[in-house]
Image (cartoon, rainbow, N blue to C red; front, side, top):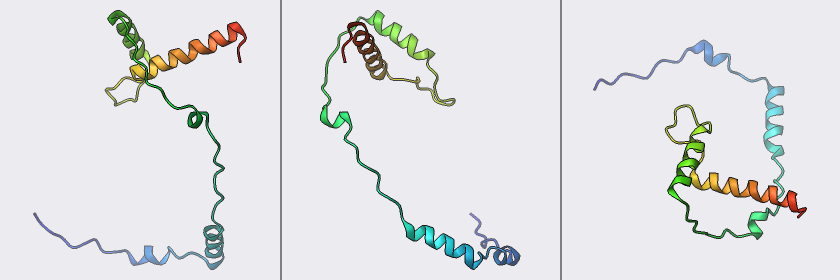
Amino acid sequence: MAVSAPPKRNKDAASTGAVPAASEKKIESIINRGSSTVAISESPAENDPLKTVTVKLLSSTLKVIDSLREKRPRKPTSPKLGISQVDWITEAIEEKIKREKKHYNVD
């Protein structure tokens, strides 16, 4: 394997990269200003732990779910489907809960 010297720097390009002092002071003031901390809000997930549930479904139901999952958009170069089975089922449950709450006037 051949080894070569690193490319030589262009002297003109290095000299044009100087930053004016006024601009440098603005940059330093922004850097020294820092940032504020993000307010930590207590999300419902922190108070509501996850529970694992086993669900038995017919294979025909899973085939329908898979065919619906295939219709979802996916990343252009990804062989994976746009949504997992678990996420699809969770989303379906959330939609059903929303409909039932609206139907029965529950908070």
